[in-house]
Image (tube, rainbow, N blue to C red; front, side, top):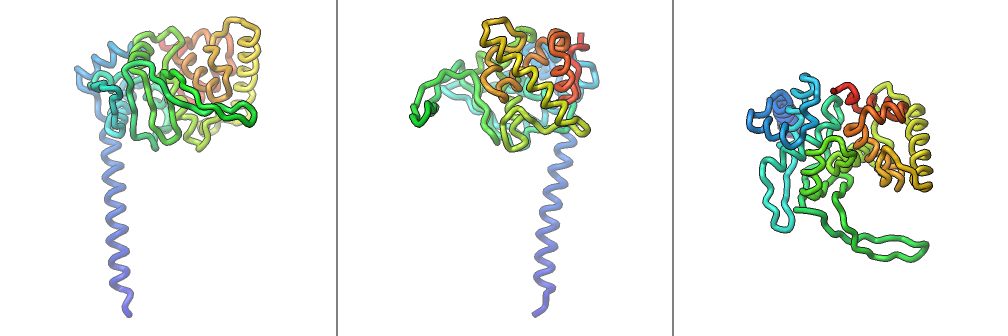
Length: 271
């Protein structure tokens, strides 16, 4: 039996997948190169004022990343919340700050769920061999491979106040960044040339000091919630990196240096 029909089918399949890959790549490049419209840009300026501090080349990159994010992500309002473009732009702008200057991307994320305000969820808690189900009030959640769940009240407030040290969108998308390794444990995919030993020492030294300060009732630069575990410390450290960069660089310089290398950003110099 001739192999030609099978080879022809195989070539057709290969051509189909190559064409689809090429089309997706071209679309991605076009989105990343496209600016926001003037009305969209003004919404981002008003709802996420930290973006005004970005150097001009990073502003252009951010707009491209926002376009890519909006094309990829489907937003679903919960509890009768109607999601509008301003909500999408606010969330996208905050989420894309983390990846504005690196190749990292939220490849597996497709859905963001938005509640009007803080929401309740049920979780199993373990006490030895006893498992209990509890109702918890949440401001946000991040699941490996998605979705991300957000309270709009808190997402809006976090975007509007760029210096209070609290930002639920940055926090939850730091978890998404962390989970790109397949595990959410405070060890993200490091930049090329970034040494794991330096990352581990800076993070563990800062985490252990943070936990000790929280346990002793001292004030902390990073939110006390970061003392929960390594992954929560990583998320809160990134929030502090964006919202209180000068203080973080002054008080915990090794941690600041590692986050600056990871994200290829230096917000302490943004003005």
